[in-house]
View 1 (tube, one colour):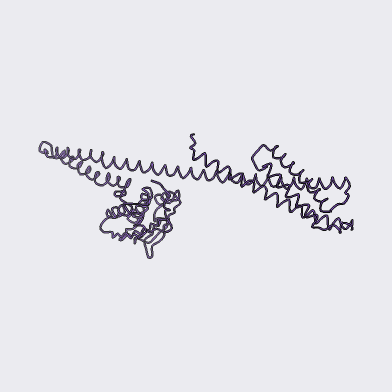
View 2 (cartoon, rainbow, N blue to C red):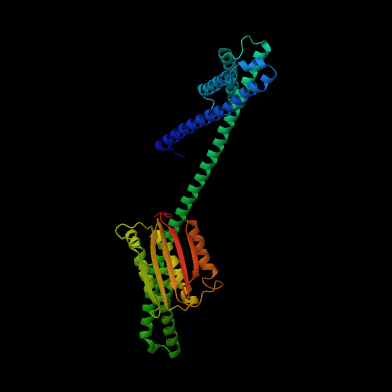
Length: 388
């Protein structure tokens, strides 16, 4: 795989950002944990041990807190200098933690001497204080590194999920483009090559029928029947299939394509197309915002609603409404057919497949009863879900 300079630069920036965030996480978590341990140790020394050795009450708690604060600062500083946050083999990380804890333990003991916590401590006292400081630093730094490791794991999972989502989106867009290409190719083949051949066959049959006197009556009638069926297949089946695959005027925009679709509905059914100004603005033929895949999907919604209205109606009127709000195209198709019956209205196959298709691009479909009778099919299609 070839990596472009831009991708390489982005990777460098990302690594630097990750390193900076890991360093902040390590130092912040270590400091917070160490401060908590240090404050607890200071309180314990002052109020618990003082009951056994009353002279210890003369040592102010601020001195013990100050010594522990010095240990925290030294611990965080050593971790920063050693860059313990960087990804390395775990023995090196353990060594960094141990080194920082040793230095912090020694600094804590020296600070105790400087702040007057001890005047002439015994060797046992010295060893106990240094060891406790070491343990405080090791535990705090270890938990800080665990926090960094947890953050790295979460970050890696988030990025992997993001990459997967991008791959799915790209695959979906590729499938949409392939579907559009196939639809266009098949529609052009039906409308062009197949229809031309059927016209030539029809012309040849016409020529034969013009010499019908050379044929007996039965053969002439059979040829006439074949010609009628062929003409009907060309006018209805081939053209209809071509329009279903690739609606006419779809290249001009969604509104022209829907006008052509509604214009093919029988005259006994009144049709109405209501388009908001927002839709007209994004469907301007000179600068359309709607992609070809979005137009095809919106037209498919109207086709499904019209089919259901004619099949389960019969409807006497069909109203199509288009609107857009917050980058979501709203398509509503209302018919005044028979009373809405969930078991039969929109019947499972076509409507369910359309609902699944919409869900792939973040949209949704709803089939509900009309105000008095009939049904309303509504779709919400996020704009920008597909790319031309």
